[in-house]
Length: 107
Image (cartoon, rainbow, N blue to C red; front, side, top):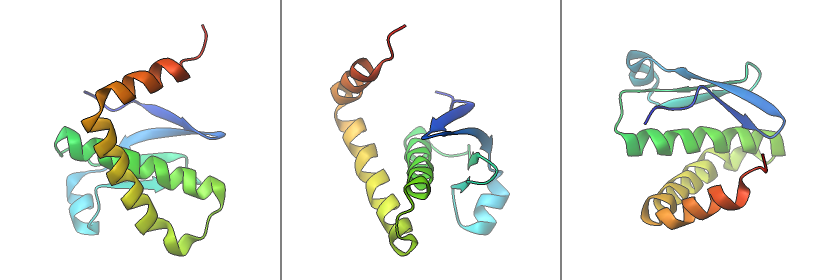
C-alpha cells in the first residue's frame, strides 16, 4: 500500500516526500521530520512493515515537537512507542478497525 501524500498532525499539515536510499544510507536513517518545512521524508525501498514503523516514528516526532516535551528523551521514547504501536496494530487488526470506526468523522 502506498503512503499518503500528506498527514495532518495537530495544527500542522505535513507533506510526505521520498527520502532517496543513498541519502538515507549515508545518514544512517530511514525517515526524517522537518517541522519548520512541514515535511516528513520516508525512504521507500523498505518492506511494508519497516516503512509503516518508520512512518509512525516520524509522526511521533511531529507530535513530540508540538507538545514541547524534553528533547533529551525524544529519540528513545519515539522509537520505543513506534515499535510498540506497530506491533499492536500488526498483531491486532481488530484494534485498527475499531479505531478507524470510532474516530471516523461524521460526513
